[in-house]
Image (tube, rainbow, N blue to C red; front, side):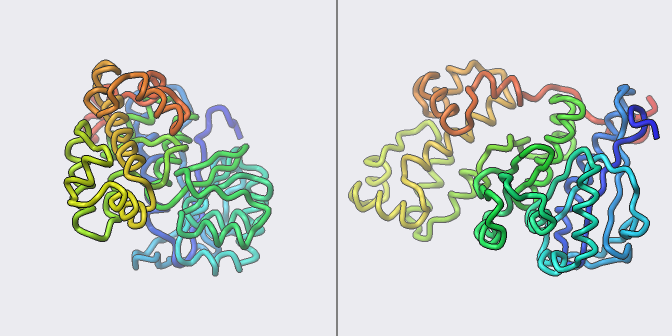
Length: 342
């Protein structure tokens, strides 16, 4: 087998009760990469995509969708470039499938890289592949993963983690972020950004981003005065959102407002405002060519230096470097089969 010219074989492991998007999300990313290679006539090897289960029979996902795998374990391809184990509510039963777990353990020794999406990390841990490694999973299952597999260093914060040749990710759409990172490693950053735009992904997120976006966090407050304050922050990121100003708008004392806000959202008001501003600044760095100083002012940081410190503390990279890595350009994937041949 000529590894330099043959396609990179991506095998996605499934089982009854798998989360359908944990399978189809990465699948669409790699399919997009293959289409991009065909369209651009780039010299890199393409991708061959396979879905695998224990017996190769059609199976029901957690949403009721029926998937038909390409192979069972006995027909599994010998050479695997990328092994991906999907997550889902059926992960406990899959962990009890000794034949499947043994196959994953053996296949990982010959694959160039092994990855899991969401609770697929439980299967990797059951196979012994995460012992001594840092790993991520969906935040709701992180404690269970740590309790069941104490040799794993579980980190519930990032959307995906790489430790050596093993990658693990948080839930559902984080699997697409992980797949984009794998494609970026194979091809380049611009290819990954092109695929993200083609899939209309809101953002191609770096692995060290938190599983919780500021926008999602804004839904957590239970009382309407606090929810209204959060909406106001989202709608006017550059406004005056000091504790005193927000407390006045909520008709509370600053002390009572700060306590109530943290009790209902899990973060301080200042931290929430900072997260919203950081998210807004990241979008503008990715999507525009505005000067960093203008973005800092427009997102409420006041100065470029203040924004730089927040970026370094939170993302471990400054705004200029962040823009260099993730700024969008104009290249696109073909939209129709006609575009491929023309």
